[in-house]
Image (cartoon, helix red, strand yellow):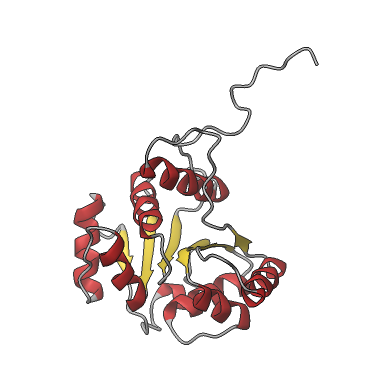
Length: 209
């Protein structure tokens, strides 16, 4: 199996919930264990942008997501925002990679400054301090100087900043195609197989010049 077997997936209150749901589905299909975190703001945005209304309690949410994705029992593990005993809160138990998608600029700022006011922030802090893979997918427009400075700071710490900016060279026909573009980029960074998006030049035949 290529890529990490255990992944923390955090969802915060920026626009872009289809990215999170599609990534969760792909991780489940690739038999990864997903440690799922979501902010209260993200739950509100998800109800606005999709037809998914998550139950408020972690255990009920875990049951819902397991059924929604067709995951195996225990494959998705959901934790409350202050569940400090969860594996993601400690370097000795945290997964090898973490993705925050979408990543709000507030969460971006908190991670950049080392704030650990909730489990999303603590999990990201653990990922950075343990030198593990942290992928942040901000979705904001325009970016302020503060946002850009925080991104640079996090990039210098080793985090990967992957703005939710889908490309068009694959000639997307639907919104799902645009969502798949971003999710494919995340999976590529995680070294997890995907067949949604061919790599640039994959089918190119060189010319004479």
